[in-house]
Every structure is written in C-alpha cells, then in structure tokens.
Image (cartoon, rainbow, N blue to C red):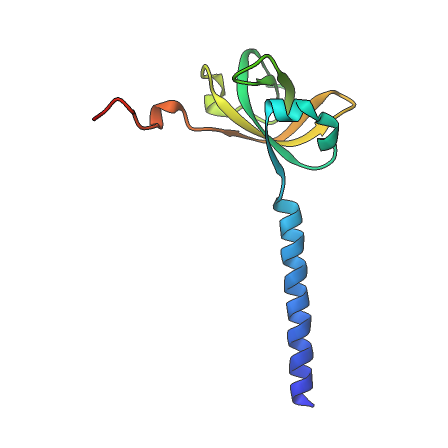
Length: 135
C-alpha cells in the first residue's frame, strides 16, 4: 500500500513538472524577425509575442517625458522598409547613437498599425567587434 502511494505521488509530481515546462515554453517562445520578414507577412504575427531586429531611424525618434512614451521607426538596414514602434517607458541610453541596432520585443497592433514594444534591447555597438585588419 505504501509503494502505491509513493508511485501515485511521483506520477502527480511528474505531471506537474511537465505542465510547468509546457507553460514556460509557451511563455518564453517567440519569433525573431528582421524588418523585411515582418513586413512581408504582418498579419501572420498579429497575435502573439515577437522580436524584431532593425535600425532606429533617428529622425523619427520622439519621447514624451510627461506620458513616458517613446515612439520611433525601426527600419531595415539594407532597404526602405520600416515599422512604427511605440514603447511605454524611458528610452535606453544608447538609442540616440547613429546607426544603433535594436531588438524590440512585443506585439503588433493592427488597429493602430504599429508595433507595441514591451522591451527594447540595444545591440552592442560595432566598436566592440574585433578588427579584421590586425595581423
């Protein structure tokens, strides 16, 4: 009888662990796209969280300190495409650097026609990359 209880307890614990892993994978998984990939099929990504990589268009950068809202265009480094981005929060320190690459994490709001970012991740500037001209 005691062995049966232990087996049932282990099965319940294994099921609970599997459930938590499944929930964690669902919450943590999201698409990682470049600007042109997103623009090609925006409606596909209307529901769910995604990450979009692109360059910040400094001319479009606007910050409203009263409402703590940052808006800008995230553009393709090699083409004319761009995505309008809105972020509720303070701007990252390096966002005003020319040519900064950024990953915006959030969701696409089709009604407003913009990407609502929950998190902004600035990629390391190229000055940290190794030089190829050194022997």
